Image (cartoon, rainbow, N blue to C red; front, side, top):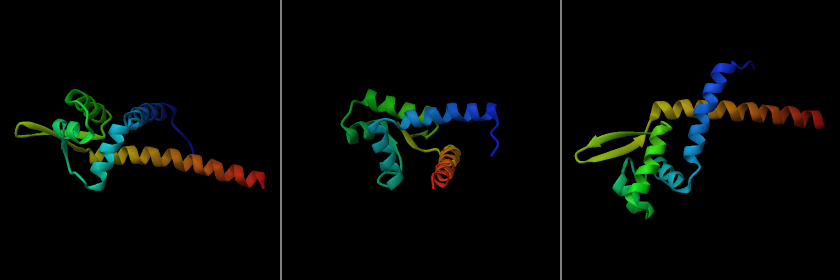
Length: 115
């Protein structure tokens, strides 16, 4: 498997941002809530109430997820609602799948060598 250094570096930077965005319990709980269908979209106010955190803290969490292109924001009435960014999530999934596929392939090679 040949890897292009420049595109790999760009992909790695983006993947780092995604993984950092997910490396927080409040953001993970929110992602699980959205993924499970418990909620389809969420506002800053709803997140702060659901998580028991301040609105500024909720706003910061949502901003991080938006900057990592995990969520998109859409104004509805007086509120900004956040939901998954499907196109970006598919891109992130491909990168994570590629990384783990390569790692698992290497694990299998090493296991064969040890036998």
